[in-house]
Length: 410
Image (tube, rainbow, N blue to C red):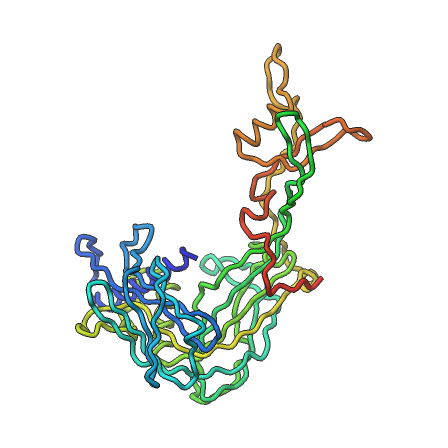
């Protein structure tokens, strides 16, 4: 998720440049100014909330500068004061046993940096949010490569119930899916005695998880509260991912946001969609609800987000996709089947031994030995089968630990 975080900061910095550059401008790194970036969200969920602090960085640098020496706390309109715990690496967390957001309350984020500079957010009202009515999916396609191609897949949609004068919404989601590696490592080979034994910890099935990075917002331009119907949440190209080969889960979070926060996300979305090119669009104002207390002219990037949240989970099984006539994802995995005589050797030189063949692929070339092949009706080793680690061990790209929420449908 570090890559997503970097993309967010770069987009925020591009917004800053858009708002301050009218004439054609070529960035001069010598005069580069580091800006505070704040990423914080509190809801009414019974959990610990996180505020992340960093500073903008030169694009060619690989990592942002993390602000790990600040004092961060939240106040509300009832007079409560909640200190956030410094977890290091720019992460500050609330204590879930001491603080939870309450709809109808107003919250302010306070930050004091190590050089005694103080920042405050605007007072943010935690609005209630309606329930998600349903999550469903349908076969669809999307245009890619500058509208020259299309790819097939499924679109996941959301319906929401009507709220109390809610006009602006935002969504994010967590997706988790079960997958299987094509050539699981089933056997071990011992070079000391050439013994082949079955593995006791087969790593064939695992789970992957990923948080959404796309900005998903909605505005009800009628000005009247109304239910939301068939809002697209996530498109999955079935031949570009292994998400739908066994079973997939998506947990959607729905937030009710203010007009000001909607404008912030909308501007950030425009920058992302333009590829972050600071000359692609006309300049517009950077929207942030966080300010330097002593110097209101200082630019601060990011937004302190305050909203109640509703969640809903949807599972999709392979059997539900199988009848849609969609292309399937194919793993790009090389399966190597060899015996010693397959290895080139001199006329007077013997072929390598089984030990040498194993060492050639598993030690020198970083393959896994996955299984033996025996002569028909005997225990005579005939071939060795090798595969790349990511094709033989699911823990290379996922976790073998089943998520607590997971329910197998089949």
